[in-house]
Length: 123
Image (cartoon, rainbow, N blue to C red; front, top):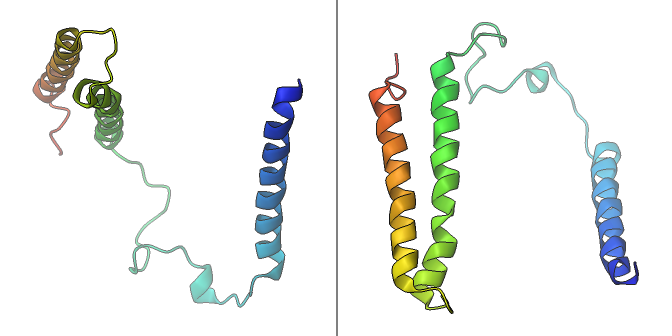
């Protein structure tokens, strides 16, 4: 348990500091509420319609696909560091190249599948 004490102290200090700043800004910050300031902000435009309108499922589908492909491309960074940086150690660079080409091929097949299914068509 002793090796964790510095970490727990740092975690406790971070929690206390964050809580103090949030509570302090809430109570000590300037408050001059007006009717205009209390309205929801819509990119400088007056709000049109209800805030509870339904979004198309296509919107969520495109958002999830973006997150999916974006996160999967993050896996390229460690590979590039190892493969291009020369830090492969005992792993052969040919194996790393083939492994990443298979990964990119799977991503490409998934992209083509989603494209053919019409997920990128915005109605």
